[in-house]
Length: 102
Image 1 (cartoon, rainbow, N blue to C red):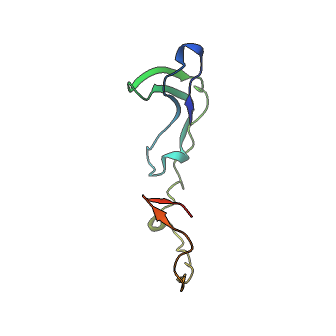
Image 2: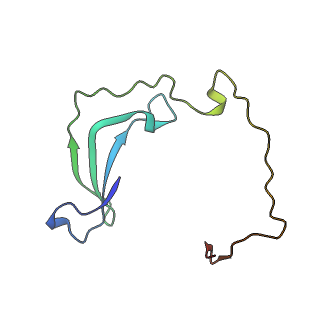
């Protein structure tokens, strides 16, 4: 979610606040957030600094119909025809050191 520091005592530290999810009964865990469960981590020491548990009465979304992979779909999609993109005069950009520069 967000990197940064949150109070004066945490200044100069690399911290991250993360929400939690469950993967139970689905390959798409982003579809099943555990609302109100937030973890504050120190990215340098790999230490859990704080666990906030404020959503005890918020239900976790059901796993039904959360598998959006192509093979799991009941109705197969009509995929678009292939596309071919050409640049007969070559690309109009330059890549140096694995970065696009022009």
